[in-house]
Image (cartoon, rainbow, N blue to C red; front, side, top):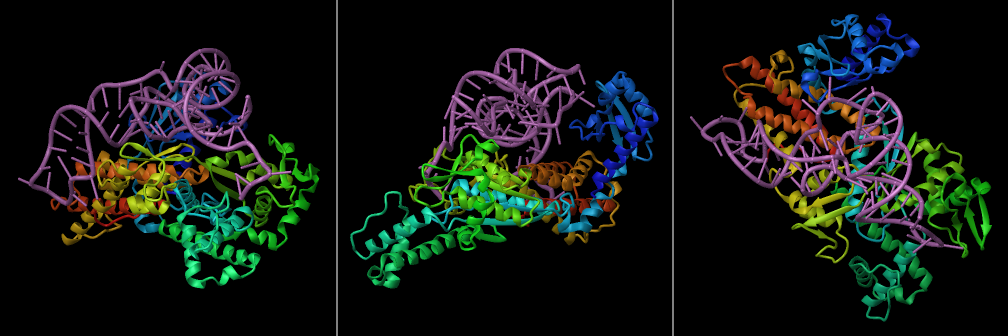
Amino acid sequence: MSLLTQTEEALKQQIKDAVLQAGLANEDKMPEVELEKPKDKNHGDFATNIAMQLARVAKKAPRQIAEEMVSHFNHAEASVEKVEIAGPGFINFFMKEDFLGSIVPNILKDGAAYGRSQAGNNERVQVEFVSVNPTGDLHLGHARGAAFGDVLCNILDAAGYQVEREYYINDAGNQIDNLALSVEARYLQALGQEATLPEDGYHGEDIAEIGKQLSQEYGDEWAQKDKEERLAFFKEYGLNYELGKIKKDLQTFGVHFDSWFSERSLYKDNKIVETLEKIAAYTYEKDGATWFRSTEFGDDKDRVLIKQDGSYTYLTPDIAYHKNKLDRGFNQIINVWGADHHGYIPRMRAAIQALGYPVEKFAVKIIQMVNLFENGEKVRMSKRTGKAVALRELMEEVGVDAVRYYFVMRSNDSQLDFDMDLARSQSNDNPVFYVQYAHARICTMLKQAESKGFSVDSKADVSLLTTEKESDLLKKLAAFPQVIADAAIKQTPHKVTQYVFDLASLLHSFYNAEKVLDMDHKERTKARIALMQAVKITLANALRVIGVSAPEKM
RNA sequence: GUCCCAGUAGCUCAGCUGGAUAGAGCAACAGCCUUCUAAGCUGUGGGUCGCAGGUUCGAAUCCUGCCUGGGACGCCA
């Protein structure tokens, strides 16, 4: 348990005891004590609205309740310096000076582990994200999903969940047959033969490249062979080529997966038939097709599982896939989907229920669209390729750090304007640099300290850290594990970018107000060096969670 | 037509399991470098929280309706 939560728990307990002793409520009428951290410092370190909550139970005015509660409150047990009643009945607690005294040594001791907690109780969570069809490059929208999913996993991991990252490869079905046909056409063209791309084929440069490669590698060998055999080979070839590119881009982007799940394996292992049998009670035949009665579970229409031509719709193997995921025993499976898939949620929820699983285990995070701006104008297509802007281009243009930071800095359900010029700019407008600069600044200070004979000392007298800027920093540092845990529970990665920005801001403010290296006050200098080290560790840990580098100098 | 997301300062967005005077960055304006990196800091101005009702001691936050913007509504994936 982190220092701050210990303090809070102790305080809550004392508040509860005081309420009971004052006879304002008995055990079963006792509401949950809620503590908040007031934004305004004049309102103390913590505040509670318990008096207002009790107004109805105790049948008294909130302020009067507050006074009776306070008169029974044990200041010493809760490390409270002063209590004030304010406004309509808020009770504000001002903690003793040293209540944050152990935070710096704690952080120095924990190092890279500072911020980690057991909030997740080791629950197993699986996050499936990206899962782009291996028929082309990752573009803008996929990139946001990739960054979001990866950071969410980092957060869950730090908060004490067991996380598994999975990519679902759509290597069966229509789109992959189409890929094979497209490759075939490009191959034949590369050999100088007449061939046209299928109507709904893939027109990208990369497919032409595959065709060229094949023609160079095999000459007309494959043109001679049986079409079926040829397509089977081209399918594999194209799949490996495209998947290889995706994997490489993801690696560059700093995203890795624990498992790559093949849709094809569902066919091979007979999982789809098994799944269909399992939900047979909710299926029926109509118009020569097999339907899933998803309306029974709140979907707005029933869905086809087996088409007239006997093939499956996209949904069918996907249900089998979700069954497979749930059978693996996760406490929760989280899917990260693009906004264009939101309509898909009700039918999948229906399927989960038809399979007999608790629907709460199934969560979907919808990632809203990204709009790219350059020179103040919306960029619809890449200038280089004429197609949707690829992640690769974006990384080359503005760097991995900026792309990742920008993609997680906003709530996933807000659309995102990505300003290329801003992300590229190495200026004070750019939040990525602002945060990294704070880290680099500390590194410089610590280096200077070393050259003056100081070293980081975890036994430095941190009670000398008494200025307002210092206590602001201490409080912010202490909050970090809770911020991570909160972001994990709410599945809101942007809370971490927000936190790291705030911490950087406090550091810059402190830096400008106080001098760390002061030969006239050696003890205070030591304390500040320890504080700087603690801030450095926390900034680095937070940046690591986001997947952004923490440079030593800039 | 149905469903999802959004609507908060000039711009981009936090805040949304109800709480005190609604926050941040950018932009604007005024200051701070012989002093540990000015990629920084300090200050000022700027808001009918889309609109209208409702619930509540209390609503940006919850409920209902409406308006605006984006997206989705295939025997595509």
